[in-house]
Image (cartoon, rainbow over all chains, first blue to last red; front, side):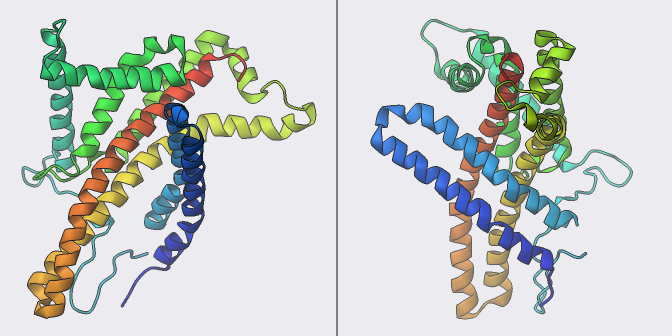
Amino acid sequence: MEGSLNMVGLGLAAIGPGVGIGLIFAAYINGVARQPEARSVLQGIAILGFALAEALFIIAIGLAFAI
Amino acid sequence: MSTRIVAESGFHSPGPADFEFPPLFGEGTFFTKPMLVIVLGTIAVGAFFYFAARRSTLVPGKLQFAGEAVYGFVRDGIARDAIGREGIKYVPYLVTLFGFIAVLNISGIIPVLQLPATSKIAIPLFLALISWVIYNYVGISRQGFGGYFKNMMFPPGVPKAIYPLLAPLEFFSTFIVRPFTLTLRLTFNMFAGHLVLLLTILGGEYLIFEYQGLVGIAAGSVSILFSIVLTFFEAFVQILQAYVFVLLSAIYIGGALSHEH
């Protein structure tokens, strides 16, 4: 089986954002559980944090296929 | 470097090559499938908002209700939250952006089309550049050329000793990283999503029809079932990414409008 080492690196690159996104949503769920009425405020912040953390991995995908 | 993995048995796993399309009307013409998706998507968005707003009544019909739901979501959920009271001025741009991106993303799971046009980098790049021009224009016209750069590169409330380090970073972040990440986030989310759908569907088809045997049919069925689940997940991601793109555009506009940052 042939392949590219890029894909192994891509898998490794998924670890960091994976942990980060997990932490973000854990904090979001905690916040909503403690204060359900804050849900609408927290939702935007959580998704924003998710998008920023995910950007790292998305750049990694781009580089894995481009280089 | 080759990114295609070729197994001995002859299954070609999907890769970036699956995003290159020949012209639709034979050699020499320029009209490709992504272009077709863009044209259809533009017509769909335009028609949707035109017919939703054409005969607006006090008690909305189904279509008017749908149009107002999209408009209200962007106005209250994005513009008002991220920009503030002045946000109402930018709602037309944000609604158009949201509708356009959402439809081009969703084209990835519409049967027959099945190609998210936003996975071609030109489209998100162009949209990100429009947002880039808008938030810089808004910032410069609001705070003046010098004021905009001063507020951006030298945010108040930071120790003076940090400025030599902070100013180039802020400059780099605002002018280069922001449009770059806006583009890449949308493009490669759609790219990766389309790739995973291709892999599960083509892989399942290969296992059932080529590999055969009990193992092939069982594994292939699981793969096809999984592709159905992934299609729903993909629909969620596609709407979410349209929301994220518009939300970040609105946050950048809001940041350029406000004085303290």
